[in-house]
Length: 195
Image (cartoon, rainbow, N blue to C red):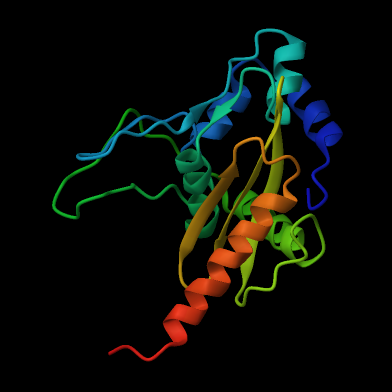
């Protein structure tokens, strides 16, 4: 996980029943539609995987998988929170979800937290200089013209979930670097005296 091992994910997802991976995704908010007053959203979608090839590709984020930065930030927020938080834009307006699903098990959440922390301490996001306890997962979404770089996760210290997508950014180093810079600048800004 910390080194982004696609072959392991491909093997596991191929063995799932059609629709099982899509159901798992919904436990993290991915594939749920949210009606948020003042905001248009799309979390993403995971195919039913009627064929073994579709399930294989879906397991490591290729094929017909779709994910938006909003959806990936929601996935990370779910890991941080233990269940999918209901996203809102205006506190007095109610968000409606297309369906309600059970949250992931506590065991799954704890395992993900451990693996996401390893990604930042010794894996593909190990070069971060930002302060705080950051948990994450990197990736590279391949398309015909190249690949998109992404990095999603959360910082436990201040309850921030994030998803950084760099269109045609190549390897995930680009998205990790941008996220690292964001947190460094945020911390610098917070440390400055407010007038």
